[in-house]
Image (tube, rainbow, N blue to C red):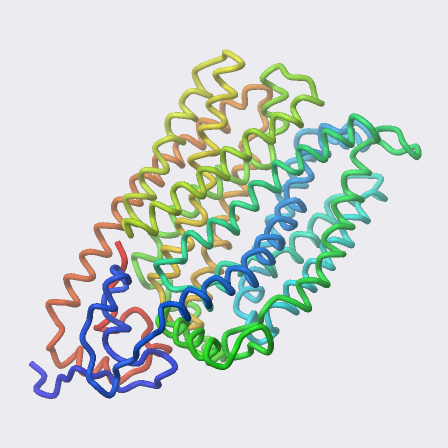
Length: 502
């Protein structure tokens, strides 16, 4: 047993100031009850704290929600274009369409890791704005394609550009404490589902009023309009999105800036943007990383296939193409409500694993109905239930994962891998949905993925609790004392005084 164990952890203060900032992230709301030494005592004015949080919400959430909004529009517009004349005019087979949806994901996989880890070096406002400008231009240029090969090339480039905004949840972790994180992530991700609904409304209006205008089928108008909008908004992101807590230049007083930096430190952020390349691959040695990956892969399989094939799925229920565009809006609204509902529960109860498991139950029921029931209205209701249950998965899993891996490189790498590995499953999801109109094979595969997510969530909750108990049992060992000599960037969540949220 180490005889030199102390109550203090000697580290750079930008990482965390004292043990209370490292202990029990599973119960962040109780941190204020921990007694500190007199020289460490820091009284935070409640009015200041509320004002800062309100201003962060005002400056960051609308802009980041808009970035995700337009990214989702760029991702899901292919599904709306498919039933707006794209397949007929370009003579696309079901396999050609699946390949176009798949190549987007392949490109996102390739560029995901640099797109996440370079955020601090490139500055988030510059990176996100450049990505929006690029994919907006390429989306608008899609109206000029004449065959499936040209479509594949453009979808590959658009997917690569969108990979550079997928680190948005990582960016949010620079600003928000753990007890606020899932709700803010839900607001941003909720806008993604609303984008799908908005896509449906735009496509409905375009098919109804612009099909044939200027000699163009409706699908060309869809790509033109949904390309121009993110180009315009990219300049707003460039000039108004804050870069990082240590680079705030306007809109906040010095007292507020200091408080923001302290908030960031409590979420185990550091000011060091240097990438430690050795840390990138070490995360794969942890079992809990792979449990998170299983959950994420299942969610991505279901969510991506639902987004890409939703208009076609609803058309297969017996609705005409115009009404199918409109009915997609209802499904996406259900998804948005599910994201906000389950994320709020996660923040209020801090029962991350149980909330994740509970959110998946509805997907299991919904997919089972889609497989065995043929009644049109019942199938549509089941699709709404699936969206309500599946869309929350990404934000719940990403925010829980952010709490469970600390250190800039380690956390950033994990969040990138949480998108890379699942996109491989998303590709298989797109390929599974090739048996219209009921898509029995695709829905059966999604049911299996939903069950896997449910079981993995419960196993992960148990395993993180096991790791916490193991750390508690070895708090005063020589190994723990030696580990305390290392920084958060070196050992991350393996630090003996860091405890996982379950």
